[in-house]
Length: 475
Ligand SMILES: Cc1cc2nc3c(=O)[nH]c(=O)nc-3n(C[C@H](O)[C@H](O)[C@H](O)COP(=O)(O)OP(=O)(O)OC[C@H]3O[C@@H](n4cnc5c(N)ncnc54)[C@H](O)[C@@H]3O)c2cc1C
Image 1: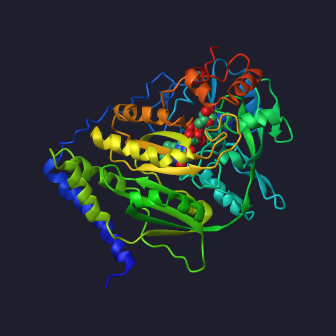
Image 2: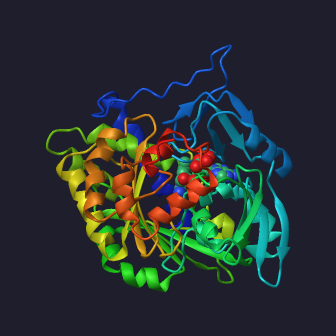
Image 3: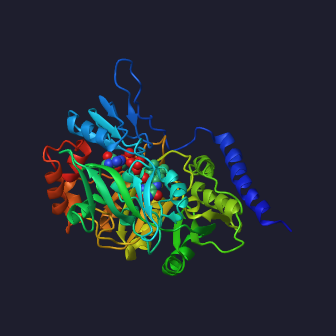
């Protein structure tokens, strides 16, 4: 009889073995020619380049500002020439950040400012990275209500794009904001909340870096808590058949669909019970092995894709779950060590399974070179002006491509499917929509956001080319 952790190791070993064995005779047979990496070299005499995590955007800012306090920040903001863009941890895949004029980081504005134990609120500097936020809040007995599935972004940067995790009862991180401080272009520090400048607050919770610089954030938290996450390979159709139930019965639930395979991975998270223990380990490197197997066999005429599905079944079938238990902020976040580019759309929650099936069927039918798991999450609706979840509970589908491959042909095949499902693109991820289409997706508040933006930044100093295009503002 084998114990569970041995079985876990054997699953990983098997995938590695398959990858190594399958790759050997077939190296170079990929159908997928690697796209050249974006070049942003350091050129002596030129300013230092900036490049985002996904390596799909870069720029050469003439000036970089890293203020050490709000007074310095205001002075820099008001006096800066040309376009000013704030940068957090450069994790957005869309071109929200690039400017060749002034790049302003709030890296020095990081840490816990104060907390209110009774209200369970904490005031935090906007530049605080999410991975620092967890321990800081824990030190005063608090925790965020939910988190995205990784913790690299800054708090202000995450709020900018309504960064989210999963869970039927949880909105994005933007919904956890009780108030924030905006450094404005006319040199003010504006405190906004549901009670003060409520209209600006409603816009600033998904601000796109277009309203001012966020210096402080007051977060609505909850008492610190422990979670246990169970990740398990299962038949995808079984998960979809039980989706409503699983979303309702668990604190957090999401799934990953594996293209060309009837299998998927469920990730189920609940409050920890006494005695919960870790089992196996989260293995972000497994993505590379998956790719190696896919590229080695999928091209085989007539049999490649079924052979791939069969190999996955052999590698994964019947293995025990991976279990991670501990502080909420550690369990909700995962390491992301494989570089990729990502497109993500939110659609009305009821349409989620049909949309996912259509995406998978399209990949299979058109034999698209895509083996990166497709992430499927739920986010609760809100009433933040430009939140992707404004006015509707949403199913969220994320499509990825490996960072050294050209994502464009694959994403171009899939994006029209999301449009048919009334999808709203994630502001921080790749999409091709422009202002007219986006305006139609936000009928309630689009004009309100534009009017507020203009009142705070009449000369468009905070708008780079991407923002001008997606907001439809000519400055
Ligand atoms: C590996 C990876 C995993 C991801 N996982 C998720 C996920 O699970 N869920 C999800 O929703 N998204 C996810 N994303 C997307 C990403 O986290 C978001 O788009 C987020 O906005 C990035 O935050 P950042 O701090 O890196 O900001 P940046 O990318 O640096 O900037 C994003 C925006 O914030 C603005 N900004 C930053 N700081 C300030 C400030 N102080 N004041 C005003 N504006 C500011 C910038 O101007 C820009 O408009 C992921 C991205 C990567 C690379």
